[in-house]
Image 1 (cartoon, rainbow, N blue to C red):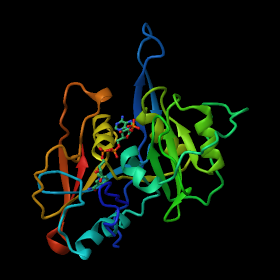
Image 2: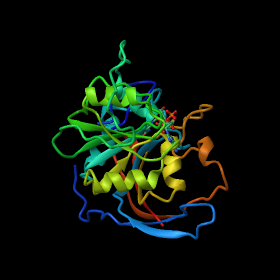
Image 3: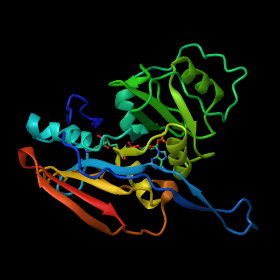
Length: 272
Ligand SMILES: NC(=O)c1ccc[n+]([C@@H]2O[C@H](COP(=O)([O-])OP(=O)(O)OC[C@H]3O[C@@H](n4cnc5c(N)ncnc54)[C@H](OP(=O)(O)O)[C@@H]3O)[C@@H](O)[C@H]2O)c1
């Protein structure tokens, strides 16, 4: 799914790969206190494919781009080849889908346990997963094109907001206290939702955080024949305040390249 925040009218609307990607457990290092020695645990995670369309200069806000309907349809066409169980977006990108309003009267939250995950009744995958650390999204529906909505929250979210999500039958998982703990989020997505293949669909901040955490297995990139050149536009991989630190670039291995409609080139890389 792509929603261009600045142009929700533009829809980037199959062909199975011979080899399906496999989910692989990740090794997580942690200390339970400052004096503790480092421990290691193995956590499950889905196979994560970052699927994006970008201009030749890496920018990802597509609203002003002059592409044909066939070109725009390539995003969903190529995404469908992965037969993913879920797709995930950041809070900004997901706001174009949520489109709800805050309740005028707060919903009673008595009896709610603040950090307990909640699964609303739903048929299984696919899932639409929203990274929303402080609970800013209000939902007009609990499904996007039939995909059940699951919010990933931190423990800073107010109980009244959890009561709101439950009333809307929107599922939620906790990952992190103040900021999103991505390994925990992915472990819950694998174990609780049974997701094996996850499409990470932007925007740039969420992609950048996942890349720096070493959680992206593959990049599926559609290069549109556009030289964008706008200032301050999100790019494929951006930085957020809490992840500023030594920059480490990621070496990629080219898996495939293919020309698609309207001069688009589809590149697939494995993250090594
Ligand atoms: N071309 C494409 O394929 C494509 C696909 C998707 C989106 N887009 C474009 O991308 C743009 C939005 O991208 P964006 O990068 O500004 O926003 P984003 O990645 O969609 O969302 C970023 C938000 O996610 C939340 N978040 C929480 N923890 C985070 C963490 N550790 N790292 C990153 N984000 C975290 C934050 O929400 P809080 O602010 O609530 O804390 C943050 O503001 C839009 O213009 C959209 O059109 C393009």
